[in-house]
Amino acid sequence: MGTLIITVRMNEGATREANPHVPWSPEEIAADAQRCVDAGAAVVHFHGRDPVAGGPDRSAEALAATVELIDRTSGAVTYCNLGAGAGLDLDGRLAPLAGGGPAPELAPVDMGSFNLDPFDRDRLGFLTEEGVYVNTVATVKAMADGIRAAGVVPVAVCWSVGSLRLLDALAAQGAWTTPVVGELVVSDVLLTTNPASPAGLAALTPFVPEAPGSWSLMAAMGSVLPLVPDALDASLGVSVGLGDHPHLDRGTPTNADLVAAVAEQAEAAGHRVAGPAEARELLGLPPR
Image (tube, rainbow, N blue to C red; front, side, top):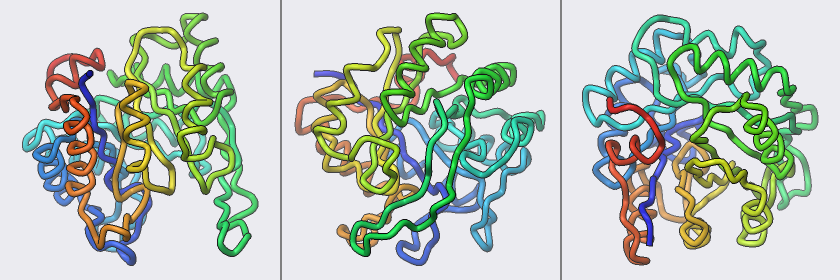
């Protein structure tokens, strides 16, 4: 039995129409992070959001303020967003790290180019049909270099077997440093990924590079909770939160409620849940 790192995906682009507990402001994110750490989370992934309307806030000021508040309160491992899929150029995506304020510990690099058109199986229609997310090999390398130059560790976000093969090639080149911090993405809505099912996950894991590192499982636009046993069996961490799914089958849960649900499954299966300090050690991050 191993040690589980739980990442809470706090807000992404989620509105409050379905679930009112999505945090937006730096103060709300930091307070929610404390509750999530108390429930078993070690890593906090957040998007900068306008505190009133909830729209995206990709400013360096918002990022620094959020990191500073989390550092002062919960001490969670901070994992920011850099405008994934927003059509920004390289400089625009790296701009939040260039503000000179407190920096997060982790930042994502999406490994490859994908269609991001969600498919609604109930009505048999796509929510969009032009959602192309472009990440050339040169862009992936430049993102990783820019993140490292800011003193931050890049996270390899792998959406497919092709993503994993690209990461393996970059690691072989020496263009991706180890230990790897990685995320496996599955989804029933984004067709570019493997399905969010045991079979979908099992088809990905043989291609995880052999380089040393730590991996987590996320279910984009859906619930990862049914896959927690499979993640534990595969020695993966679990990424869960209202940013991915409102989880209305559980009422209107908070992020801390969802973290607790993962921690309960893990502990019932004999696994320990890491706190922030232990997670930093396991992820190869320096003490905060």
